[in-house]
Length: 340
Image 1: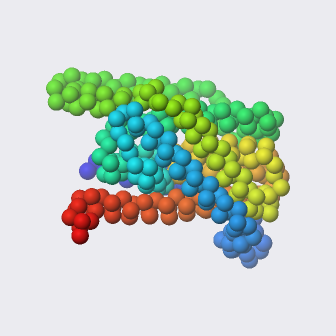
Image 2 (image 1 turned 135 degrees about the vertical axis):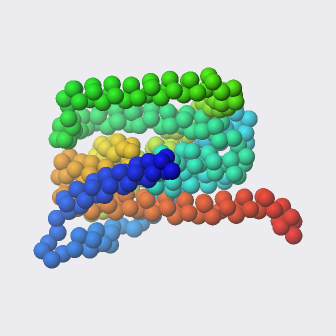
Image 3 (image 1 turned 60 degrees about the vertical axis):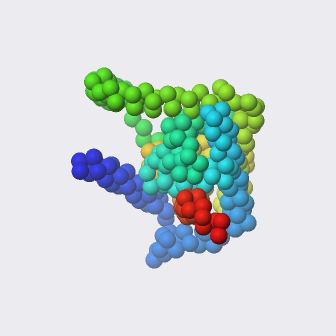
């Protein structure tokens, strides 16, 4: 009961922080006297060029397809041949779960793939870790390129953020976290040492996970893997550009602006909140306002529509994938029905 209560409290805290951040971002949305803020958001949606939004949705689907194929490449050296359609469905389910449980999509997509192709969860999770490391390197490269183009603006923007640069509190936090980690490690070590069955389970799990992680070194076409990774992030950039072109207040911004805003958005999405909700709605409008003089109310409305449209794509794609997965699993468990 206690672990369940702890999980519920954790999600309530995340939800509370998310609502607070959304409230803070909405507070910057100034409208005329007697005008409703949600009506203003609706008007912003109506003023958007829907053609560019459709282009963004198509680019999103293509990026998911490339990511699904890249995942298949990592699974092949481990000895598993996942279907492209199954890896795509599992990836979409993972994105859906991430909107509810931060980082929960990483495990859920592995479990979804297990249901479809019987690929062990720990092996596939090891390949997901490799993916995340590669994506982190791509993100760091993108941020570096952003600073190369817009270093003065980005540094000036960062200086305006309410970040505590005092080292005392940070040092205490680091010491506290390290102490907790060491204590938990010692407890786990003692438990594993005393239990032979638990030791075998941990060893088997670790071997499976390590096999998945090391799959990147066994790739036959490493250059293709690198190209796929570059294309995925290039498509993310194009998606941001397409959405900026869709709104009158941001349509004139150039590629350098898109690059810096994409970097700010990527950092915001990395915050431990569902789908980046909240943190994204605070940082991106401030970036538009501070860096490119977009009126704050228009910047907030743009961000809500942008993130909302992207979330809708994830939800629709994820829900469809959940139903398709359920259909495929039931069909495979009753082969006699397919024969008839």
